[in-house]
Length: 286
Image (tube, rainbow, N blue to C red; front, side, top):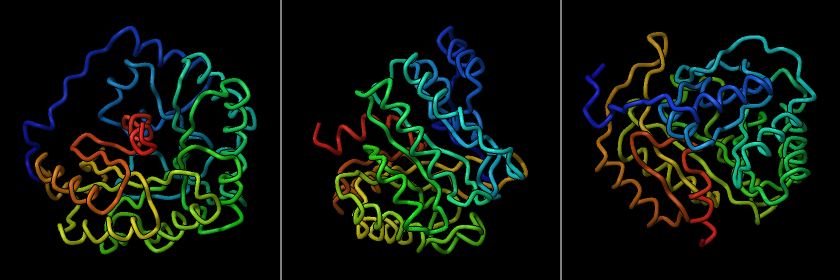
Protein backbone atom coordinates (compact mmCIF):
# COMPACT_ATOMS: atom_id res chain seq x y z
CA UNK A 1 0.00 0.00 0.00
CA UNK A 2 1.31 3.50 -0.78
CA UNK A 3 2.42 5.73 2.10
CA UNK A 4 -0.36 8.11 3.24
CA UNK A 5 0.47 11.67 2.16
CA UNK A 6 0.61 14.69 4.42
CA UNK A 7 -2.85 15.93 3.41
CA UNK A 8 -4.42 12.84 4.99
CA UNK A 9 -3.15 13.63 8.47
CA UNK A 10 -5.89 14.79 10.81
CA UNK A 11 -5.51 15.86 14.43
CA UNK A 12 -8.21 14.70 16.83
CA UNK A 13 -8.97 16.58 20.03
CA UNK A 14 -11.31 15.02 22.58
CA UNK A 15 -13.64 17.75 23.83
CA UNK A 16 -16.51 17.95 26.28
CA UNK A 17 -18.93 18.07 23.33
CA UNK A 18 -17.59 14.76 21.99
CA UNK A 19 -17.88 13.11 25.38
CA UNK A 20 -21.42 14.47 25.78
CA UNK A 21 -22.40 13.02 22.39
CA UNK A 22 -20.97 9.63 23.29
CA UNK A 23 -22.85 9.68 26.59
CA UNK A 24 -26.12 10.56 24.82
CA UNK A 25 -25.72 7.66 22.40
CA UNK A 26 -24.96 5.30 25.29
CA UNK A 27 -27.93 6.53 27.33
CA UNK A 28 -30.33 6.00 24.42
CA UNK A 29 -28.75 2.76 23.20
CA UNK A 30 -28.14 4.11 19.69
CA UNK A 31 -25.56 3.33 17.02
CA UNK A 32 -23.90 5.72 14.60
CA UNK A 33 -22.16 4.96 11.33
CA UNK A 34 -19.60 7.52 12.51
CA UNK A 35 -18.37 5.01 15.10
CA UNK A 36 -19.15 1.72 13.35
CA UNK A 37 -17.49 2.74 10.05
CA UNK A 38 -14.58 4.49 11.82
CA UNK A 39 -15.20 7.78 10.04
CA UNK A 40 -12.21 10.15 10.05
CA UNK A 41 -14.54 13.12 10.64
CA UNK A 42 -16.07 11.79 13.85
CA UNK A 43 -14.36 14.29 16.16
CA UNK A 44 -15.39 17.23 13.98
CA UNK A 45 -19.03 16.14 13.72
CA UNK A 46 -19.47 14.95 17.32
CA UNK A 47 -17.82 18.18 18.46
CA UNK A 48 -20.56 20.09 16.62
CA UNK A 49 -23.33 17.92 18.08
CA UNK A 50 -23.94 16.12 14.77
CA UNK A 51 -24.16 12.36 14.19
CA UNK A 52 -25.38 10.01 11.47
CA UNK A 53 -27.65 7.54 13.21
CA UNK A 54 -27.48 3.90 12.13
CA UNK A 55 -30.70 1.98 12.65
CA UNK A 56 -31.62 -1.72 12.45
CA UNK A 57 -28.78 -2.67 14.77
CA UNK A 58 -25.05 -2.68 14.15
CA UNK A 59 -24.56 -6.02 12.37
CA UNK A 60 -24.86 -6.16 8.58
CA UNK A 61 -25.98 -9.20 6.59
CA UNK A 62 -23.54 -8.31 3.81
CA UNK A 63 -19.77 -8.43 3.91
CA UNK A 64 -18.40 -5.64 1.72
CA UNK A 65 -14.62 -5.66 1.76
CA UNK A 66 -14.27 -1.91 2.21
CA UNK A 67 -16.62 -1.48 5.17
CA UNK A 68 -15.73 -1.55 8.88
CA UNK A 69 -19.31 -2.27 10.04
CA UNK A 70 -19.60 -5.73 11.63
CA UNK A 71 -21.15 -8.42 9.45
CA UNK A 72 -22.91 -11.61 10.49
CA UNK A 73 -26.30 -12.57 11.94
CA UNK A 74 -28.12 -9.50 13.32
CA UNK A 75 -30.22 -9.38 16.46
CA UNK A 76 -34.01 -9.07 16.09
CA UNK A 77 -35.24 -5.62 15.10
CA UNK A 78 -35.79 -3.20 18.00
CA UNK A 79 -39.26 -1.66 17.56
CA UNK A 80 -38.49 1.14 20.04
CA UNK A 81 -35.38 2.30 18.16
CA UNK A 82 -37.20 4.90 15.97
CA UNK A 83 -38.54 6.61 19.10
CA UNK A 84 -35.07 6.74 20.67
CA UNK A 85 -33.60 8.22 17.48
CA UNK A 86 -36.27 10.91 17.60
CA UNK A 87 -35.38 11.61 21.23
CA UNK A 88 -31.75 12.08 20.24
CA UNK A 89 -32.68 14.45 17.40
CA UNK A 90 -34.80 16.44 19.84
CA UNK A 91 -32.14 16.60 22.56
CA UNK A 92 -29.52 17.71 20.04
CA UNK A 93 -32.01 20.16 18.47
CA UNK A 94 -30.90 19.13 14.98
CA UNK A 95 -32.15 21.14 12.03
CA UNK A 96 -30.92 18.39 9.68
CA UNK A 97 -30.38 14.72 10.39
CA UNK A 98 -29.08 11.75 8.42
CA UNK A 99 -30.42 8.26 9.12
CA UNK A 100 -28.69 5.22 7.65
CA UNK A 101 -28.71 1.51 8.42
CA UNK A 102 -26.92 -1.75 8.10
CA UNK A 103 -28.23 -3.92 5.25
CA UNK A 104 -30.84 -6.37 6.55
CA UNK A 105 -31.43 -8.95 3.81
CA UNK A 106 -32.87 -11.18 6.54
CA UNK A 107 -35.98 -8.99 6.86
CA UNK A 108 -38.85 -9.34 4.34
CA UNK A 109 -38.86 -5.58 3.67
CA UNK A 110 -35.17 -4.99 4.36
CA UNK A 111 -36.14 -2.67 7.21
CA UNK A 112 -38.06 -0.19 5.04
CA UNK A 113 -40.95 0.13 7.52
CA UNK A 114 -38.40 0.80 10.24
CA UNK A 115 -36.97 3.66 8.17
CA UNK A 116 -40.47 5.04 7.62
CA UNK A 117 -41.32 4.80 11.31
CA UNK A 118 -38.08 6.57 12.24
CA UNK A 119 -38.99 9.42 9.89
CA UNK A 120 -42.49 9.55 11.41
CA UNK A 121 -41.18 9.64 14.98
CA UNK A 122 -38.77 12.48 14.16
CA UNK A 123 -41.52 14.44 12.41
CA UNK A 124 -43.72 14.04 15.51
CA UNK A 125 -41.30 15.70 17.92
CA UNK A 126 -39.21 17.83 15.51
CA UNK A 127 -41.43 18.77 12.55
CA UNK A 128 -38.99 21.47 11.41
CA UNK A 129 -36.06 19.05 11.06
CA UNK A 130 -35.07 18.10 7.52
CA UNK A 131 -34.41 14.37 7.13
CA UNK A 132 -31.99 12.54 4.88
CA UNK A 133 -31.99 8.75 4.66
CA UNK A 134 -29.10 6.73 3.28
CA UNK A 135 -30.62 3.39 2.36
CA UNK A 136 -29.46 -0.06 1.19
CA UNK A 137 -30.63 -1.38 -2.18
CA UNK A 138 -33.58 -3.37 -0.73
CA UNK A 139 -32.67 -6.00 -3.35
CA UNK A 140 -34.28 -3.82 -5.99
CA UNK A 141 -37.87 -4.09 -4.70
CA UNK A 142 -40.08 -1.25 -5.94
CA UNK A 143 -42.73 -1.88 -3.31
CA UNK A 144 -40.23 -1.86 -0.46
CA UNK A 145 -38.59 1.33 -1.72
CA UNK A 146 -42.02 2.96 -2.02
CA UNK A 147 -42.50 2.49 1.74
CA UNK A 148 -39.55 4.80 2.41
CA UNK A 149 -40.42 7.24 -0.36
CA UNK A 150 -43.98 7.65 0.97
CA UNK A 151 -42.53 8.74 4.33
CA UNK A 152 -41.21 11.75 2.37
CA UNK A 153 -37.65 12.38 3.52
CA UNK A 154 -36.18 15.54 2.06
CA UNK A 155 -33.20 13.59 0.68
CA UNK A 156 -32.88 9.92 -0.21
CA UNK A 157 -29.35 8.67 -0.66
CA UNK A 158 -27.96 5.41 -1.95
CA UNK A 159 -24.27 5.00 -2.67
CA UNK A 160 -22.93 3.23 -5.73
CA UNK A 161 -19.59 3.24 -3.80
CA UNK A 162 -17.27 2.37 -6.71
CA UNK A 163 -17.03 1.78 -10.46
CA UNK A 164 -18.72 -1.27 -12.07
CA UNK A 165 -15.46 -3.11 -12.84
CA UNK A 166 -14.61 -3.28 -9.11
CA UNK A 167 -17.95 -4.54 -7.80
CA UNK A 168 -16.86 -8.18 -7.67
CA UNK A 169 -13.88 -7.13 -5.56
CA UNK A 170 -15.38 -4.36 -3.45
CA UNK A 171 -19.07 -5.23 -2.94
CA UNK A 172 -19.81 -8.68 -4.30
CA UNK A 173 -23.40 -8.86 -2.98
CA UNK A 174 -24.42 -5.60 -4.66
CA UNK A 175 -25.22 -4.82 -8.30
CA UNK A 176 -24.30 -1.56 -10.00
CA UNK A 177 -27.30 -1.59 -12.34
CA UNK A 178 -29.64 -2.28 -9.42
CA UNK A 179 -28.31 0.72 -7.51
CA UNK A 180 -28.77 2.99 -10.51
CA UNK A 181 -32.30 1.70 -11.02
CA UNK A 182 -33.15 2.41 -7.38
CA UNK A 183 -32.06 6.05 -7.68
CA UNK A 184 -34.02 6.41 -10.92
CA UNK A 185 -37.10 4.85 -9.34
CA UNK A 186 -37.10 7.31 -6.45
CA UNK A 187 -37.50 10.16 -8.94
CA UNK A 188 -40.37 8.34 -10.65
CA UNK A 189 -42.15 7.67 -7.36
CA UNK A 190 -41.70 11.21 -6.02
CA UNK A 191 -39.71 13.75 -8.07
CA UNK A 192 -39.81 16.21 -5.15
CA UNK A 193 -37.29 14.13 -3.21
CA UNK A 194 -33.65 15.01 -3.76
CA UNK A 195 -31.53 11.95 -4.56
CA UNK A 196 -27.91 11.53 -3.57
CA UNK A 197 -25.08 9.09 -4.18
CA UNK A 198 -21.39 8.74 -3.47
CA UNK A 199 -18.17 7.01 -4.45
CA UNK A 200 -14.93 6.09 -2.72
CA UNK A 201 -11.80 6.70 -4.77
CA UNK A 202 -8.42 5.03 -4.55
CA UNK A 203 -9.47 1.39 -5.03
CA UNK A 204 -7.97 1.03 -8.51
CA UNK A 205 -10.53 2.83 -10.66
CA UNK A 206 -9.50 4.91 -13.67
CA UNK A 207 -10.41 8.55 -14.30
CA UNK A 208 -12.47 7.49 -17.31
CA UNK A 209 -14.44 5.04 -15.17
CA UNK A 210 -15.19 7.71 -12.58
CA UNK A 211 -16.53 10.13 -15.17
CA UNK A 212 -18.62 7.34 -16.67
CA UNK A 213 -20.23 6.66 -13.27
CA UNK A 214 -20.97 10.36 -12.82
CA UNK A 215 -22.69 10.35 -16.22
CA UNK A 216 -24.71 7.25 -15.25
CA UNK A 217 -25.80 8.88 -11.99
CA UNK A 218 -26.95 12.03 -13.75
CA UNK A 219 -29.00 9.95 -16.17
CA UNK A 220 -30.98 8.67 -13.16
CA UNK A 221 -31.67 12.27 -12.14
CA UNK A 222 -29.34 12.13 -9.13
CA UNK A 223 -29.07 15.61 -7.58
CA UNK A 224 -26.30 15.44 -4.99
CA UNK A 225 -22.88 13.76 -5.18
CA UNK A 226 -20.08 13.00 -2.73
CA UNK A 227 -16.59 11.79 -3.62
CA UNK A 228 -14.07 10.79 -0.96
CA UNK A 229 -10.83 8.89 -0.44
CA UNK A 230 -11.10 5.23 0.55
CA UNK A 231 -9.14 4.55 3.74
CA UNK A 232 -8.42 0.97 4.82
CA UNK A 233 -10.19 0.49 8.18
CA UNK A 234 -8.15 -2.59 9.16
CA UNK A 235 -5.58 -5.02 7.76
CA UNK A 236 -8.36 -7.46 6.84
CA UNK A 237 -10.02 -4.95 4.50
CA UNK A 238 -9.08 -3.97 0.96
CA UNK A 239 -5.82 -2.08 0.63
CA UNK A 240 -5.69 1.43 -0.77
CA UNK A 241 -4.35 1.38 -4.32
CA UNK A 242 -3.82 5.12 -4.62
CA UNK A 243 -4.20 8.29 -2.60
CA UNK A 244 -6.04 10.75 -4.80
CA UNK A 245 -4.62 14.30 -4.46
CA UNK A 246 -6.97 17.18 -3.54
CA UNK A 247 -6.53 18.84 -6.93
CA UNK A 248 -7.81 15.73 -8.69
CA UNK A 249 -10.88 15.72 -6.45
CA UNK A 250 -11.42 19.31 -7.54
CA UNK A 251 -11.32 18.19 -11.18
CA UNK A 252 -14.06 15.63 -10.51
CA UNK A 253 -16.14 18.21 -8.65
CA UNK A 254 -15.89 20.58 -11.60
CA UNK A 255 -16.85 17.80 -14.01
CA UNK A 256 -19.82 16.82 -11.84
CA UNK A 257 -21.13 20.38 -11.72
CA UNK A 258 -20.81 20.60 -15.50
CA UNK A 259 -22.83 17.38 -15.80
CA UNK A 260 -25.65 19.02 -13.87
CA UNK A 261 -25.39 17.86 -10.25
CA UNK A 262 -27.02 20.47 -8.02
CA UNK A 263 -24.52 20.05 -5.18
CA UNK A 264 -21.18 18.27 -5.01
CA UNK A 265 -18.66 17.63 -2.24
CA UNK A 266 -15.33 16.13 -3.28
CA UNK A 267 -12.17 15.74 -1.22
CA UNK A 268 -10.05 13.23 0.69
CA UNK A 269 -12.13 13.38 3.88
CA UNK A 270 -15.58 13.73 2.28
CA UNK A 271 -18.04 11.03 3.30
CA UNK A 272 -21.70 10.40 2.40
CA UNK A 273 -23.16 12.45 5.22
CA UNK A 274 -20.36 14.94 5.70
CA UNK A 275 -21.92 18.43 5.90
CA UNK A 276 -25.07 16.89 4.46
CA UNK A 277 -27.31 19.76 5.48
CA UNK A 278 -25.12 22.25 3.63
CA UNK A 279 -25.26 20.16 0.46
CA UNK A 280 -29.05 19.93 0.65
CA UNK A 281 -29.34 23.69 1.09
CA UNK A 282 -27.10 24.19 -1.93
CA UNK A 283 -29.11 21.72 -4.00
CA UNK A 284 -32.36 23.52 -3.26
CA UNK A 285 -30.87 26.86 -4.09
CA UNK A 286 -30.32 28.05 -0.55
